[in-house]
Structures are given as C-alpha cells and as structure tokens.
Image (cartoon, rainbow, N blue to C red; front, side, top):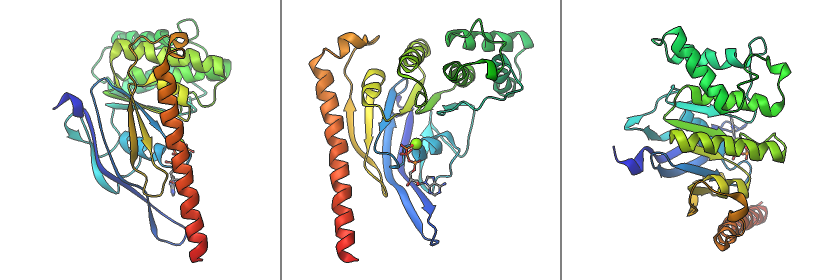
Length: 274
Ligand SMILES: Nc1ncnc2c1ncn2[C@@H]1O[C@H](COP(=O)(O)OP(=O)(O)OP(=O)(O)O)[C@@H](O)[C@H]1O
Ligand SMILES: [Mg+2]
C-alpha cells in the first residue's frame, strides 16, 4: 500500500433514479486519493453530492460504478474500519452516554474483556470532555453534549477512516469551535485519516490539510484541490491574520462562484431549448 493512496476513490459514479424512471448520475467520475492520516475537506454547493460520496465511502450507499479502496481493500459495505458522524447523533434514549458508546464497542471488540471495553468507552468519553456526564441519558444532555457522544462512539471503534458529515451543522458557533478543537485534538493524537464534509469555508481551512472542491451536480466530480499549508496545531487568531488564509478563502469562494455561474448558464441554455 502506498501511503499517499490510503484511500483511493476511482471513477466513482452514483446514479439515483428520478421520478420518470431514468437514472441520473449525481456523482460521475469522482476521483481522489487520500493520504494516511490526512484530514480532507469536502466542500461544494448544497445538493452537489458531498453526502453521497461520504455515504458511499462509509459503505451505506451502493456504488453505481467505479470503486473505493481503503488500506488496500476494496470496500463492499459498511465496516468497523470506517466510522461516521452525522449532523445529529441519533442516540438511543433508553441508554446513557456510556451505554450508547458501549453498544458499538461490544459489537466490534468481541474478544476484548469486559474491563478492556470499559476502558475504551471511558477513554473515548473523556477525550470528548464527558468524563463527568457519561452516565447521563440523552435527554439530560445538551445538543453539543449529544454530538460529543456521537464523536466518542465513532472514535471508540478505532476506525481507519473517520467520516464527518457536517458534524457541527446544528450547533451554535461557540460549541462548534469547541468541538472542532476536540476533534483536532483527537486527530492529532490518533492520526486517523478523516473526511470532513462542511459548508463552512473557515472551518475547512482551520481543520483540513487539503480541501476538495466538488463541481455542481449532476455529474459532480472533483473540481479543485487546495493544499492548506498551515502548521499544526493551528491557532485561530494567528491563522486569520496570515495572508495565506485570505488567499485560500478567495480561491474557495471564487470556485463556488464559478460553479454558480455555470449553473445559471446551463439553466439559460435549457430554457432556450424548451
Ligand atoms: N436516495 C436518493 N434518491 C434520489 N436522489 C437522491 C437521493 N439522495 C440524494 N439524492 C440527490 O442527489 C443529489 C446530491 O445529494 P447529497 O445529499 O449528496 O448532496 P450534498 O452535497 O450532501 O447536499 P447538502 O450540502 O445539502 O447536504 C441531490 O440532488 C439529491 O436530491
Ligand atoms: Mg449533505
């Protein structure tokens, strides 16, 4: 396995049926290699196909064509080597934070002793800052705390790849910044290869090593890749004073603008034909 191709996404296609029974290739020819330990951002307009790519990588969404290789093995469904965190953690209300994390740990670490599993669960909950609340039920936890449980649940499985689909999307900006740092702290220690889907340009620059910009769908693919060349750990206040930060921002925003103009052009052409 080449370290630069820890995750290899080749000629990925997703066709969804439309109401008229035709297939529409929402994603078409998406190609990306992700390095081991890299944090890659996936950015693009709403509806372009970011979650579609992420859920195919998670094995939760059937691949129509092409494929995905993770650590030299082609994926063919979900597996404990890939954990996902969505916008809402969907915790089981009859279990505590501890119980929710333990559920996955019991399934994945079948041969571990009870004591070993307990250590994994307690450790995962403590790194997300829930050491004192692990025996609370979800109704006793705030939205931010529930999302912390979702993150603990994902990292407790010791995945090779962590998939984050707008994990902070429903949180207020302070909690959002807290949780961005929680995740960065974990990734700094554990070096988990990560894909982060986000709408937030600043979040992508702060968190990612590389940002993958998707073109608008249908037939969405990789439009542009940006290397974010800031050392880690990053300090927000220093980063936003750096000229490179404005350069990255400008590159991202102008790419998004171009996609929008392209969409308008296509819509006008379609209107003319009709
Ligand atoms: N199960 C499905 N069946 C049919 N079409 C779908 C299905 N899931 C998604 N789509 C369509 O595929 C396209 C891409 O959707 P997707 O959810 O991947 O976009 P996204 O980039 O994650 O958007 P957002 O930023 O709003 O979350 C959209 O046009 C959507 O309507
Ligand atoms: Mg989405």
